[in-house]
Length: 386
Image (cartoon, rainbow, N blue to C red; front, top):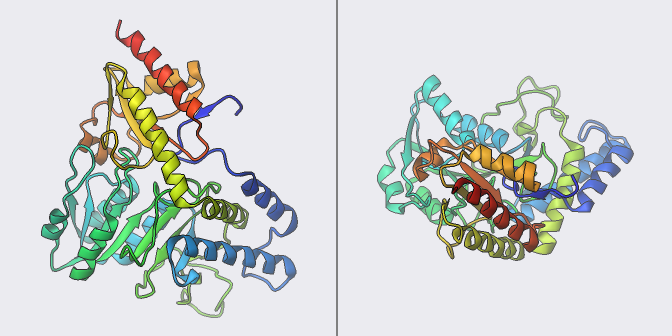
């Protein structure tokens, strides 16, 4: 939509690099066949694009074997595969108080159905945790620790590598929710002691919706949550053991993955360091502007602290949904309001009763758009102050 200033990047990035759309159109026109399901030229081309995307993702995340990465529909799909495919009856799982419902709900489902134990580590109001709390929470039956790399409400960045060291020393596995970090923060699964990484294609990786993935350490064998055709070992009764086929039953989203490939290549070319630095500068710019408006409160890490490009805030006692509606209708500014699928984080931040307005920065956000958002919030606040 022309004229819209888009600050909902934490939900889906927009706009996309032109190469993303070009690759998807080329796929539809030239080789939109089933990858791995035939030996004809179109099927082979589709398979090659999937493998090239796997290789580029592996390069970005420090994954040694691209086949240890399986494609998923989104982060939610990947997290469900990781959690439900790994956790067994009697296991104990640790996560934090700022997890997304894509972590909380699968875990609570397993608690209700197979009797697992769950410990939620407390975060402070800014989303930070104490590493000693993880150590104290470990039990003899702790099999898995799940943390988000960055909160989708607060923008807080978790000390993943340090948590991974604690897990490794205890023998527990670490699953990282990379929904708000993939393509935005440096991720190296080996250096950061990450055993499983779930990530979206449609956010920081700048690909289309309906894409994502799950890295699974070669020593981990998950029980697949989907069973069906894989194009390999079709004579076998059970799901094949070979990767990535084991976790990719059914026809893959070839068109979307072709677009994702171009998004990943764009991120690699621009570099994570440049992307994060640009988004952090504009995040600080937005926070400084909002903090200058009386009656506006900001959630998460304070000005000057490292965080992702998420700025959640409230205006006086105004309903967050109403503020978002006014921004959209009167100022052509798109933000997200409400609870952002993370009531735990709102409880931690003290906003469970009110929710919050979330503005999120993307790589293509301009300084002028940030200034326009600050101006609009100031105008809205002035109306509520009367």
